[in-house]
Amino acid sequence: MLYQTPSGKVPLPTKQGHIFFTCTDIECCRDWRTTEIRDPTAEVLLSQYPTAEMALNGKNAVVTGAVMGIGKAITEILLQNGAKVALLDYGEDKVFFMNCDVESEEDIKAGLKKAAETFGGIDILCNNAGILNEGLWEKMVSINLMGIIKGSYLALEHMNKLTGGRGGVIVNTASMAGIGPLPSCPVYTAVKHGVVGFTRAMAAASTLSGYGIRFNVLCPAFVQTDLFSNIPKKLGRFSELCLETQQLVEHFGVLDVSEVAEALLELVTDETKNGQVLLVLPTDEDGKGGNSYISFPTYVQ
Ligand SMILES: NC(=O)C1=CN([C@@H]2O[C@H](COP(=O)(O)OP(=O)(O)OC[C@H]3O[C@@H](n4cnc5c(N)ncnc54)[C@H](O)[C@@H]3O)[C@@H](O)[C@H]2O)C=CC1
Ligand SMILES: CC/C=C\CC(=O)/C=C/C=C\C=C\C=C\[C@@H](O)[C@@H](O)C/C=C\CCC(=O)O
Image (cartoon, rainbow, N blue to C red):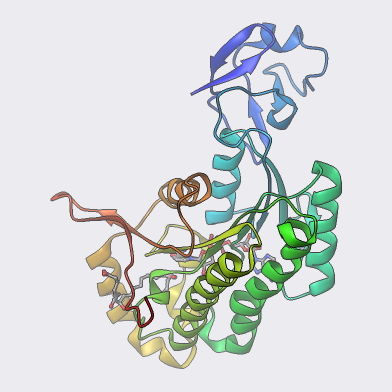
């Protein structure tokens, strides 16, 4: 992939931070007055570049749970494809652009407002923040399901074409546990099924009412992140089922966050996708697994 600099197009920089990309060609950056040069290797804010030939040029995105794990990979792939990104997350030492607890409507409202004002509108929302803790199951319902509902409803105020928005796409992060049960995690399974159902219903509501917003949902299997560490401690009363969970991990394998981000990019950029549930699985040596769109029974034509 190429990106535009005053000296012409150069290869995508190799070293990546949250939103800073290191340009290997310091001369091209020095020539460009608006470029912020932060060290001798010329760290530049990618969003300052007038990028060319990128799928998401001119698009503004908001990502929750953005500073680590899947959210960080989502942020990076959106930036690499030309979007501007507001990162919403919480925690004292992990805040990037906006401190936002998705349990708090006020926080989300403020984050979306800041993003809309700073960027001039919102085109993409990735409701990704989530936890795994069967012992704190009420909190899991609040963050993993209610946080997504709050984020989606509040984003409508900025994105809905019927209320002055310009439409766009909302992608929610559910899980493979939103399609079939994970026995060691009944509440996690319930909320992820909830995210899948909510997203599909919102997609239909948007089509019927003319919001101009596509709603899709990502369902990854196991992904190598912090959430996927110390599993037995996160299973609460079901900790005796950790061996069964480990067998599922061995059966399915473990994804890299970049594979989930690639799947997210497809849901964002393919304008034919609305109400889609994308299962993301590792591909094994025989070519089995990989990504697939889930079919559900339909009762009304
Ligand atoms: N890692 C895995 O195996 C899988 C994860 N998922 C889902 O992907 C999403 C992201 O998970 P990971 O990246 O794995 O986890 P992670 O623990 O690496 O990152 C989660 C991020 O969400 C943020 N977050 C948590 N609660 C928040 C809150 N109340 N408000 C704002 N930010 C909050 C954290 O600060 C962190 O930056 C979650 O919804 C998770 O359920 C889905 C399938 C598999
Ligand atoms: C312990 C939790 C760790 C990480 C969080 C997470 O979200 C991971 C989920 C990973 C896998 C879930 C798998 C569930 C599998 C079973 O319920 C299957 O019955 C799934 C069924 C169908 C899938 C669709 C299909 O293959 O056609």
